[in-house]
Amino acid sequence: MKKPQTWRHWAYHNLDMAAWHRAGISPLNRIIVVLILAAVCSAVLETEPTIYDGNQTLFRLVQLAFAGVFLFEYIVRVWASAENKEHESEWQARMRYASSLPAVIDLVALVTLFLALYGGEGALLRLFRLIRIFMLARLGRYSTAFHAIGSAIKARRYELIASLTIGMMLLLV
Image 1 (cartoon, rainbow, N blue to C red):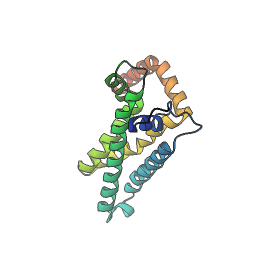
Image 2: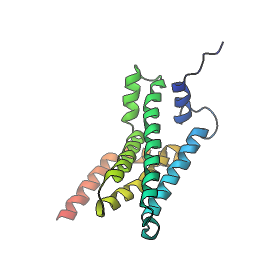
Image 3: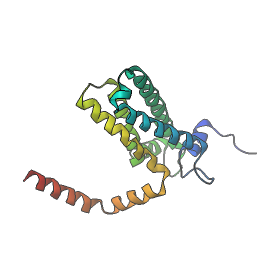
């Protein structure tokens, strides 16, 4: 007799690319990709004054809806990561997921969404909009090309840090 599937098990296997045992990405992840692209389109449209002016309330509601959906997704991902049996405990699995690069990118995207909702005007708001466009980085978990780039950066991180440090020092001189 087959063991009944829990919601957490279902969420883990539908949200975690490594746990999905079929070709391609899960239908749930396809929906998330569409939502990410829609959120980025919304952020881009907000930068156009002729579209944004007069529609601030609509953009704020859309932004609030995206923030709520992505916050829920993040919480479910952390909760469901306890299904990863590679770790000793559920909390270790959750902490390992929460400290992973994809989870940190998700968290930064979430923080910028909420800061833009409650942030100021002017240059600060434009900065939040620019950072929100980087939500495209969230798509990295769905692409082997992003994984290859991430692996290359990780393999050469010390050289990159040294180069960045030297470059910053040269800018200051």
